[in-house]
Image (cartoon, rainbow, N blue to C red; front, side, top):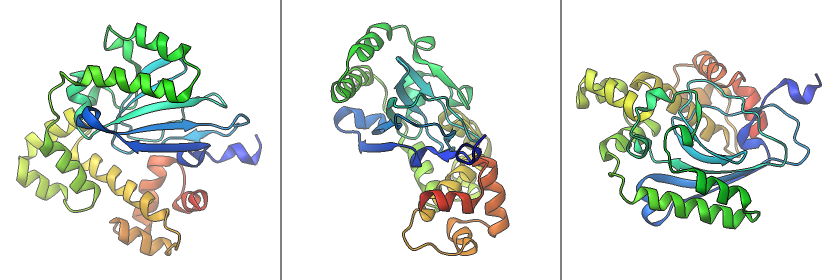
Length: 253
């Protein structure tokens, strides 16, 4: 194995990734629309890291639901392929799928296994050669399926956003919801309990900080992200990615 493939490459550093906010009625259930195109000569092993989110994607000719992850995933994506996705707003996938997210953790499930109305749109998407037209088809179909879906719970999205920004901790969240209710609602809406969600969102804060153009020392980065110290950050980052914080900062640079 050559050196290029020994260390996994963060998905965000592989190929061309772009996203735009979801607009119109799509905004009710989806946070953003995104696409990810890998180079034609891509040979590296790509790692997708946990972010607490779920996505509806079109890849390999199929619509898939990608559930929330606890640890790194290493998807087999063909070189040159473009993946289209719609990222659910926090907690909204439960409304659209009517399935607790805890049942989808760590899985990419063909949408046809969960719904019985996907064959026609999958065929249309697969036959469309234009990326812009394929995206428009996906958006129009998702829009039609979203109109009759109940609004996601605003308190769940608010909980997610406050944990993401480091403005709320699990103790204060338990006080607001009640410990048992919080654990049950968190598993249903996000896939895992509040402590795991808090860890994943703290890790995502580390990623955001590591992208800065003026890097701090890893010790300072750990404190700014909300870790007790650098060793604490290193343990969490390696568990979620198989990479060290230094590996990640080098890739993002």
